[in-house]
Length: 518
Image 1: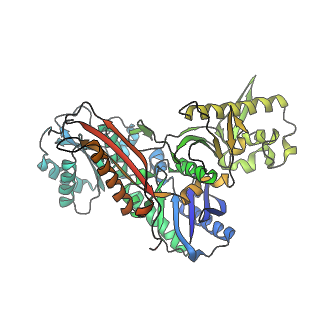
Image 2: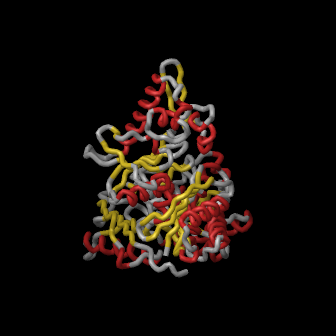
Image 3: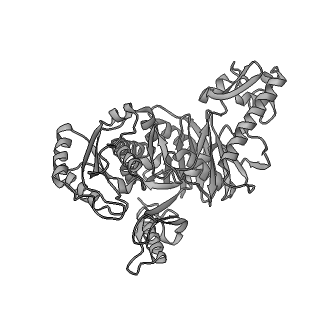
């Protein structure tokens, strides 16, 4: 059986075919406005390039920017009933209080606060006001809202009220999708609440997207299960994406990093993914992207669900090189996917970073004679500027002074020098489609992140074991083979401000995908 990986980027849709641990073929197709037709084009191209029998494709893994783009571009988002359980506390900071005005209006600004929630030590702030939830259900029906998000104060300690509120809402609004914040974000009320509301607003788009991908694969004669990559480098089954679309945010850079680890065999490294417009940089730890430990801004909204610790700069193969007086700037403006038409080395009239790479001998694409007339001082300044930008990125991503290799991937990685400072640069085979490779080799994960109270005979060791067991159960339920599971993250943090020797435990396991049978 073969595995097909597809990554839908802003410029290109990349696709690869893998057999065991070997890349048989990798192709690029232009990303289309409807995305789905671009996926079909990439799929057909890679099947033709590899010469495989499509009936022997076992599964398809897709990385998509659909949901991130929806938030950034303010489109395809539903209006949501945002319900917080916590009165009388928190009344001064209503739901979505720190959201940009335009995004708040798009999701409807339907904010409700009712009695409920817990103190930090597990005591009730006030009993859940079930009558208020019933009244809100009536308003949801009257307004025709398509989803609701329920957030309880300190629901990470006790989620009983969130669960009960969901039950009441669905009893009075049959079929209403209800997102509970305990399933989305981590601790921190406003950021967790925002993540839940954002997820609820994308549920209709998630349903449409999953249907579209399924239809695209069936039209290509592939009647096998497909998976969507999430932002921790692992996979979600299609039905899980319908419930948790926000978990796909930033999956593109994550796929590139996982692909870089696979293509080089390295578990710890700095990965530099250079595209046509931007450069994404992050660190690998045990073969997976290091996770961000702080709140993450998505479309102007602070959230606290897991995200890779990746940052971007405006440097790519299509970046404009501009000389003003004695200074040379590279980016952030770019010709993007038009680089093959507009760059000087391809017969165009725009000086780009790719032209500088050709002029300095870093690559031999295009026609080198077309850039020979460039001023040598300009070439030198631009080349040094590119090297400085990349070195600054790598240094920012390192977490220690220990020397680590730098892996360069992406179509624009021709800009990378042989060394960044004292660090060696590795450019693996199939580097230009590393993101699709990352999607194809992705594993299934399970994760637990909650607070345990070490009382009544419960020890730290038994709590860690319970958290690991929960994570394993989640991974197996998602389709992982039990015998392949391994723990890649395990941490516990004592919470001194909570009574009863409380500790927050986070465990994550990954494993290989189970049977390909539909």
